[in-house]
Length: 325
Picture 1: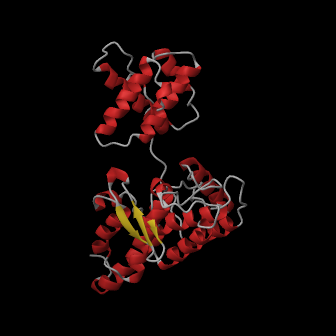
Picture 2 (picture 1 turned 45 degrees about the vertical axis):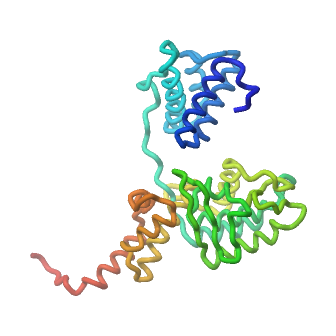
Picture 3 (picture 1 turned 180 degrees about the vertical axis):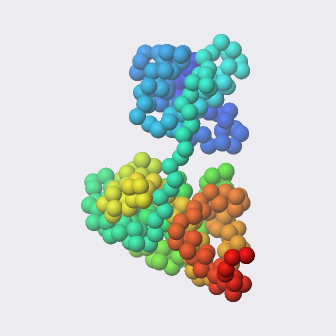
């Protein structure tokens, strides 16, 4: 938060809270965005502090969001208020029982090579803009890396020119979730796509500085794509390529990561690989602490069920004699 915004007690509390949380090793980027949105709402309504009435008004302004999103944002504000309450017992703290009830999350949409192929074709048809001269190339490479490397959206957006090794086809993901860094080797096709993109990205007048973003959306390449900008671009491709779930839902950007994990499992079954011994490798590649986290991404789809059933039959079908016991 800019020092110029710390003019009242509320701003000072926010600054202290963020510094305290970050001293514990937490990034708190999303939390800062939520609390700063609340601060701007107070400012807009000529309020200097939070109370029940202004908190309810702020909550009402987000009525268009899902219950889970609203609950998460309100919980972030409540945690901030609880921090204040330690030294300011009379400060307002939202009642946890009045927060929206958590609803079930929509299951991910799993898609495959055919859908990604249509998205790549649509990316090539995108028109460059004055603020994003590399828009078609950016969206094409984003789709390739999300699908073939299973990157998180934030990992993709934080990549700089120094983080990519086009000669060896390697990405260096630095200080990602839980402050873990990892080396991500790319497939042959993904490496070729990366080199093709860099042939455009490194042309003047775009910045070739090692610390400049890989995905830039300004003429000078000083500023990288935001999460919103990438999401809107990918959503455009989903719609143009008619990539939808069985219930007609448009996938989310994070569904690329689910599709990558499921696709890896399906590929191993079809190749006759030892799936169990490969799971720790998948966890490491995706940046997980263990396969417990990876299991969250492994959805049971008909193609996977058929591949597993075929393997079971090939290995143990001769033991099944049929007939009633």
